[in-house]
Image (cartoon, rainbow, N blue to C red; front, side):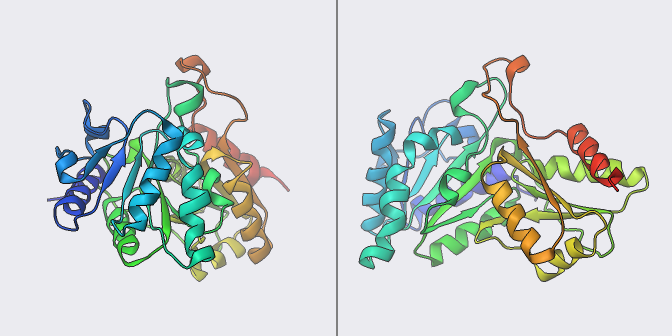
Length: 303
């Protein structure tokens, strides 16, 4: 039977606690909802550790667990909280291996969400980790992707920032790249924008355009296949890169890397350069299908 991303994460966490004897840390883990249904109903005696609401301190506690070789999973319920939660992760855990040759592997679950939750908590903030050495960044949106990332972490000794999104939790499907050559435009999508990218591709193709699609799982190190680069290089209008973070971060950095490699123009879309409010009329949401289609058409119409 197919399992959703939510069920996959829950099973991984349960196995991590009961069979791997690992630890899981975070705030309000055992509260109503169990972090969107992604945690098993286990408690401190089982290794599910409730942290206090002193946000900045949590990362140091988790780093200590990693130094004890407990392979901790650190749950950050809203990615915006990384501004408070990540200092000890990026400044100690991520640097320990390089400076002292003592690995400090942490699996950070940064969970994205937006829509009516105000100016602090919402959206994806993987760009916060991107510029720091010693961190690997991934954004799994399917069950198999999540299993692969967890398996890689358990064999590795680096810090993993896992950029999740609640919008993917009900997903059962796996994604396929469309990387044939001679497209009119290639869409490259990260995080929750991967779902909108699929729909935008369908709309554009109904109108007669030939659209390629590349799903990004590995953000750092960036992993795009040679076929993917070739699809961009042979396209007529280059590529449109989508993200659920502000474009002045990962998006523009990745676009520059792809441009250097392909000599093609890479445009970006992400969060608008404004602060989100706590009402739908003042939200700051990731690019919608309509917005992606409109921007793609503008690119395609350029001479």
